[in-house]
Length: 223
Length: 250
Image 1 (cartoon, each protein chain N blue to C red):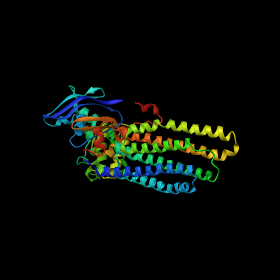
Image 2: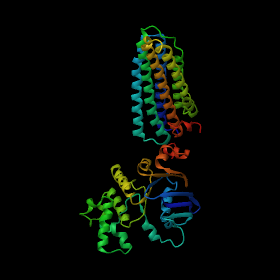
Image 3: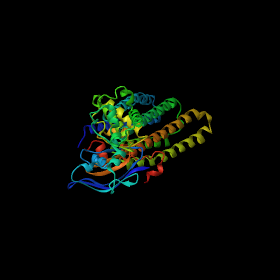
Image 4: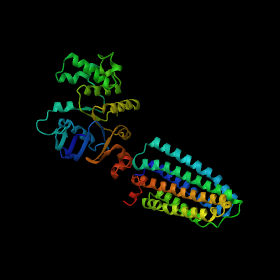
């Protein structure tokens, strides 16, 4: 039997999907702005973040209404509470995209330090992890969520690569490159943090679907 | 520690099997809630814990219900002593059309306890235990039917308390009460569990979630799932429990 409540939950799911798409787009645009050294694109990311902030508030409010009015239980309760947590992570991810845009603004007017290779790779990884985590949420796909979690070390490795290259090949050799190198180092750090928040989302999806807590217990992922 | 151990309990009304192979343990000084759709066997199960079903014609029962280690369906069970130990609170408050005082002391009189010092002390203690003493101490001779529904329900619990039972069976004790009165009875249950083991049948799932430590879900005479209340309501293991809790069934 289809419940009226199911329609409300489906609407909520669509809202999260929309917020996820916008967040994913923000990551893409922030790194594009960095690559193109475009002040305009970077400012666009910063301006558009307001929309994501508003979506977070609207989804939170909707969740609170559903909790208060329907007093859901079991999978419904897990779905709504995890939606609230996932939105918080998405909003943080969007804020990190803003941070990347701000780093872009800092170095936009300065000479290019180096061609960007690993940072775009890390950005592509972060973006695809966000997409998969949100798909896993919408389709209640535990296997996809697990794959997202297992990709996190890849992000750590890329961040380490960027970090050692910038420190050893630039800052250590020529301290005048430090402001630009540190900005890029922070970008790598922001992207890696995006992957961490995405991992949280994937862990919440697993709890939502199976009621199984994998957070802080990654060894249980295989079972 | 378990105070009640039910093993392979079957109950038939004539040819109709109302309880099927029920096995579960009830923990001492905890609240256990029994939930499930109408006609699923939860009230029948509750009544089987103090042999109230014996009063219904054509009922036959197989299996074991151990209370404090002794099978209440074994030969030589003293039914009066059993029902003193396992008291029952019903859906509608059912005070006797007597004074408040006589209601509380009714059970004592039945058991021949008439010593004034004891009865006065029991009267005070029982009414105090359900937080009714201050409300009624100046009108103990008034007819119990003059009390509000919620006060009447607390009086019925005080009437049981006077008998110093170990187990309280509650069959939808709040279904005839408004939300404020319900909340008072629920608060009382939390206090009572320091002394008693409580088993409550309720159709109100929020109430089961609020008051109980353990929950059992009955369906068509089967005990589908039994576990800690927080687990049952957030992460039930059986799809049938999940469907019932989320309103997809029942």
